[in-house]
Amino acid sequence: MVISESQSRYAEGWSEADYVGGHPALDFINTVADTGKTRLSDKIGNWDGVRKWAGGAGLLPRPELAAFFQDASLDDDDELARLHRFREQAYEAMLGLVGRTDTGSQSVIDLERSIRDAMGRGAFSEEGRQFRWQPDARSPQRWLDAVALCFEEFLRSEDVTRLRQCTRCTWFFVDRGRGAGRRWCDMRTCGNRAKAEAFRCR
Image 1 (cartoon, helix red, strand yellow):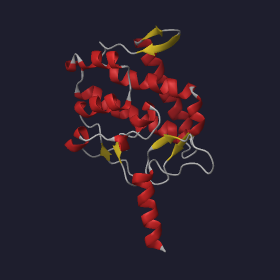
Image 2 (image 1 turned 90 degrees about the vertical axis):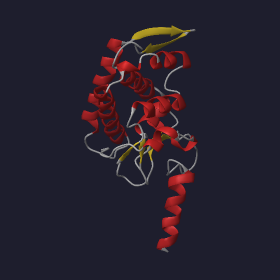
Image 3 (image 1 turned 30 degrees about the vertical axis):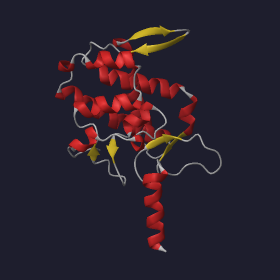
Image 4 (image 1 turned 60 degrees about the vertical axis):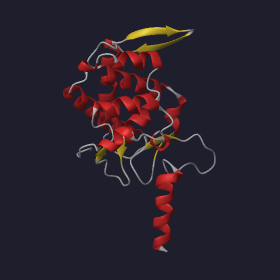
């Protein structure tokens, strides 16, 4: 669980290495700076961090995201705390799906409840010949709803069968490769650290 305060540099320095999940839902879980299995450093510890993450992750189409930015007064500390709690709830659910915890079933039930609540506050909209759930940009819960609906889409997709967790940190990713499969969230970070540690242990 995240227990430390976010450092301001996280809100300022989002890079390509922060978006390795292969899906915005997983990139949301991965908004924790983590070089072990600790989940201690929050990268969205303030609303500026949330907004910058959402823009880089492609959480919403640009017009919808712009609508979310219009009324910052809706984004208070309680809603940020709610968003953080949902993130850890979703993290536990994904752990259950990859077989890393026995509490996965209850966590998935809790995640389903959040998705249903988001649907109840949102609208079923048409885009061309495709349909999707759209969060209400005027709701104080709009950020949580946007992420919950993103998980709804992920859990219905084929990507869920390719869900993996990095063997070194807590980040999740979609493994679309062939062969033995990915072991690390990113070769440039955890992959290099793991190889360096293995070399030192020889």
